[in-house]
Image (cartoon, rainbow, N blue to C red; front, side, top):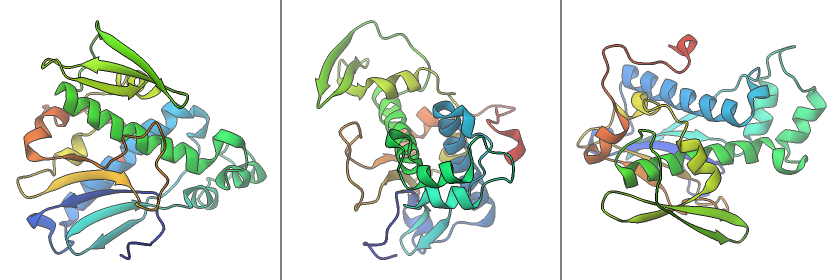
Amino acid sequence: MEDNEKYLAHFKFEGNLVKDGYLDARKSAEALIGIDEIFRYFLYKKSPELNAVEFDLPVRTRKGSWETLIPENIGELIQLALVSGGAIYGGSALKKMGQNDVGDFGFKDVFKGIVKGIKWIVQIGKHLKTLKKRKFDKVEFKETKGVQFIGIYNDAGEILYVPKVYLELFTEIPETIFNRLTQLVEDERKLKIGFSPNEKVDEDDTKKEVSISINEKGIFYKEKEEEDVLFPELA
């Protein structure tokens, strides 16, 4: 893949276990279902009325990693893949949304917000060393360029400033939301999530790619006799 190829964001595994860009069929299927589940969860939390919209996430591999790329023109692709007669919005409205012509409700903006949310959940989980819901008794506040941040402390006394909207999202997140993806994390296979280097960095973004290594796997992967499935029909 060329560095200047246009895409919005990526989910990728890196390490010696995928150094030639291969992931076996079963693991690939688990990774794709995991990404699909995460995106649908965040999408429906943000815009419940879009649950009638079907969309595909294209997969691209290259030597050195296994990647799923989220396309830059995802709004146009969603419009094309729209379930006939199942959407709340008409075709013309969806077209405008895909082109970012309706203010803050463009499809690209929606999906960019989803990626930022996913990245922040990873950052918060690593900071607190858990995805379990908790009450934050001691917090700090600051505002930067119109974005309200809340500083949360971990057990080591370290503070992490998180945009208020994404901290609120963290308090509702299922503890097993990353299970399908992080079960594939091994000593030589790390998960990385981030935006395209060509994508503009927003003030409320983590400002960097996030990663989950084998040392952090226990934060995001919870073994259960019967794993909760966010969307059973995808299994």
